[in-house]
Image (cartoon, rainbow, N blue to C red):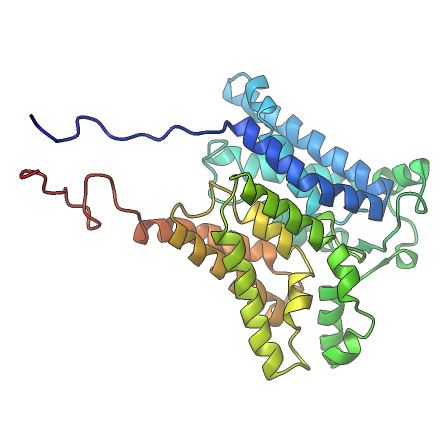
Length: 353
């Protein structure tokens, strides 16, 4: 009797796409709600515009491909994409920024490559970077914290989102990363630049930024919950955060006048959002554990390099896109052993088995 396998082993997926997307939405909900609370009705309106337009562009692309739209709209992938795009935008950005961002993410970031599971770059990050380059003023106008109950009312907020912001200097300012970059350009060093910075408030999210730059603690909690649910693994988040921590600790120890410490780096910008919800995208990240560690470390390294020496205050979007482009190369050189073969690809010798 032959011991040679007559068919390949197969592993069935334990969760459907819609179940995974539902868990991601649940994990993002606390940080999203916190951002809406901190920045008021304009943030909620922009969030609704972005998600609804993402679903509309998804349906349009599916119709143009000649396939039924409803099964794909129900799987929640367009909702998650729209939600992540909204998380990367200034909360008081005009409505058309949300629409253009959703169009870029769904059409150029997803369906140009063939749809769900075929894209090379993360759609939300592609939209974020394209918007930042194309509309730098709208994408760098950050509202002060204006809690839902004390900020602009329902009607005034409609005018902000759909009618344009008046007298922006009175209600906007720079993010921590943007402020530090501006201070450096005027030859001011870190101790003076960060004199009003509160690491505790930054951890809670009480500072200017996008919805995805607020409340590191809630994003961290959501990410850990996703890991416990088995939706994502630890390799990318841990290697990404550890890479930033090590790089910033070394350079801050060497020159604390010019390099921010680990706490500032980890609680500023979209690091927590990227580490748990974007870099871990199944499609645009490597398949093997070692490959994922290299991918995460590369993302963290690029984020630190761009923040420290680049022209933009924040480097998460650029870092993710650059590492997305490297993912096929990582998968090419770091591959698991194929069942029935040695690691060099040659078939196992089972003649004497």
